Image (cartoon, rainbow, N blue to C red; front, side):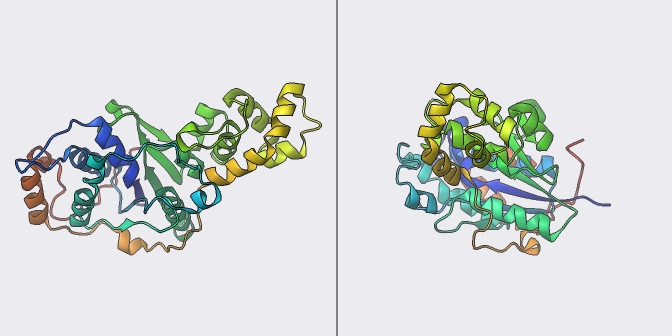
Length: 309
C-alpha cells in the first residue's frame, strides 16, 4: 500500500539555522538574503529526501505565549533577534507561499505547539499516515510516537542529506540516545532544566541523576509520590524536596501543547501545482540561480521512495 507522509516544518528553527549556518550575501540591490537562501535550500532538500504527499510550515507568532504568561522569565534571557534575520522572514514566507505550501501560526502558542497539534490530529485522522517533523529543536522529540511520528533533524546548518549529518529519531532512536521514552523527554527537561529556554528544573540535578530517577519511576509525578521510599542519597532527596515546585513548573513549560485551537485539513496541506514562473522570477531576483535545478517539475511528483529503510 502506498505510504502517505505529512512533513511538518518548524519555520523558525530552520530559518535560524540557515542564518547561522549559511554565508551572508546580498542581492545587487543590497538585500541580505543568506538566511532565505539557506532556508530554501533546506526546504527543497527535505522535500526531495522525504517525498511527502502533504506538507505545512509552522511559525512563532509574537513573544507572548501561555508560557510567558505563567513564567515571565521563560526565554527572557535570550538576546534580541538580529534585525538582519528579522528582515529576512517576510521574504522567506513569500517563497513558501509561492510554492503553495500552507503556513500556520497561532497567537499565544509557539510553533512547537502548532506542530504538536497538527501531528496528533494527523495520526488520529489517518492510521496509514506518517508524520515527519523537520526541526533543529530537540524539544520535538517528546512528540515521537513509534514510527508514525518521527523527527528529522539536521546536525548543522547544511542541507538535509545523509552525508551531511541528519539525525532521524523514531522511538527506538530516542531510547537509544537518552535511555528514556519520548514522553519522558518532558520529565527529563523538568528535572535537569534547559538553559536555552531558561527553564530551571531542579537545582543540582543533572542528566545522569534525572535519567536514573525516571528509569526507576517513570515520571516526575511518580518520583514525588515515591520520594520517601526511593533508594537515593540524602543529598538528592533534599534537592528533590527543595525543587518540587520548580520541577512541576518546568514540566508545564516543557510540555508541547497538542490541543491548540487549530484544525488540520490534509487536503489543504496536499502538495499542489505551483507557479514555476513565479518561483523562477523570485530566484532570479534574489540570485538563487544555482537552486533552479533543485526545483520540482511543474507538478509535484508523488515519488514516495522509502527513506527510512
